[in-house]
Amino acid sequence: MYHPDRLRHPDGCPALVLNADYTPLSYYPLSVWPWQTAVKAVFLDRVDIVDQYDREVCSPTARIKLPSVIALKQYVRPSEFPAFTRFNLFLRDRFSCQYCGATHDLTFDHVIPRAQGGRTTWENVATACAPCNLRKGGRTPKQAAMPLHVRPIRPTSWQLQEQGRRFPPHHLHETWHDWLYWDVELEA
Image 1: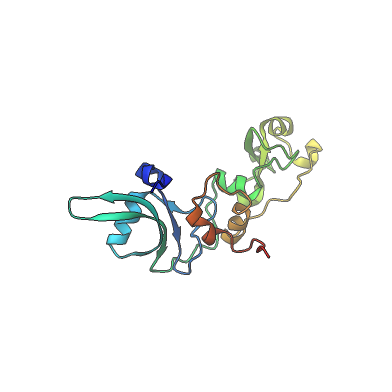
Image 2: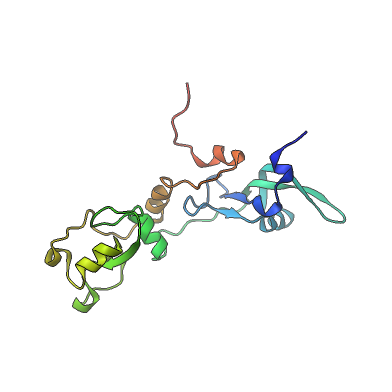
């Protein structure tokens, strides 16, 4: 019987990684491991296989279906606050300029410019498109008459996870759906 997973190259078979409570470790970026890491974790007895692809890999002594969803056996407590990175900043700000709402040509802007003593912190950096950043220059939003849509804050990991759920990946294997969207409305 034909199934697309059987023809799929193993590199196209990542495993969705769930925490021990069966929630994804991360929504954005989605917590996935390459098939090699997932298989190694299975053999080291660090994960349970929740679902699998039809695609098999073989060694001289074993044959295994590639896991598509795995759950850690030990719970990993998420950190309370995420790392301050460009990606996390864009995620906090929903990948849009905080001055005009544009979603392309994004960079970041110091609300209080560094030349005026502003620091590079969650509370002083906002996503901006390049034209707005250039227009604002070394001035504050008030000086430039460019109000921010939302005041920048230091987000919690939970807040970023919630933001990430608004930006689902382009491709999700059908075995992943049951584990990712627990809060979608059920069909009657």
